[in-house]
Length: 236
Image 1 (cartoon, helix red, strand yellow):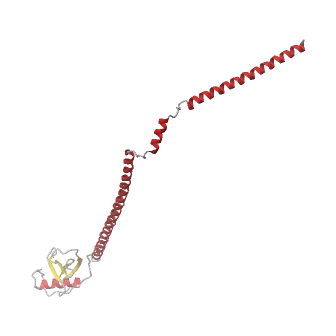
Image 2 (cartoon, one colour; image 1 turned 120 degrees about the vertical axis):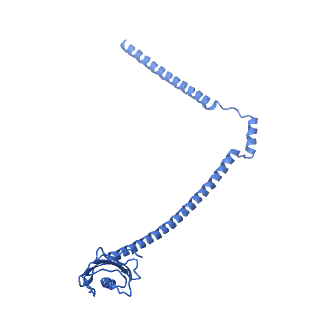
């Protein structure tokens, strides 16, 4: 009995396995069929049979002339115009740039010339200042020139008088100029009755004359005490 029962159970298990295999196979076939039908409906459902009229229309369209829409032609013309405009604009910008560079070069040359002229003027001014600096007020060890005048001394600024001539002699003695080459601009009182200030120059240096201070020494005459080279002539 036990062997018979075991055999029966094995038979039932085999039957169940076979049924499961068949069921799974049927299910698989059904799924494939559904997928096939659905795919056909999705990808081929919108197509319609081609009629003779449609064929004729297609032939007429194929045989007809190729017409370009006006909008496309206008777009092409606009693009060509824009290209020409862009080229002209680039040329104009390049010409303007060249003109600006030429103008800048001319301005730079003018500025350089002005700067060079200013430098030359500055150098000349510096040279003049140096020359003026080389002629400061000096106090020399001059001696009295002597006199024929008697004491008590009385100063006189009358041109051609003895005192006038002795003052002129003292001025030329201090500057080293001779009466023939000098121009006497002025002799004036130096602040008291025993001093005087004279201004003289050569004709070439009339704008930068000498100014000489002289003082009277009793019984010895006029003596230079200082010489100054002026930067301008107050009497010219």
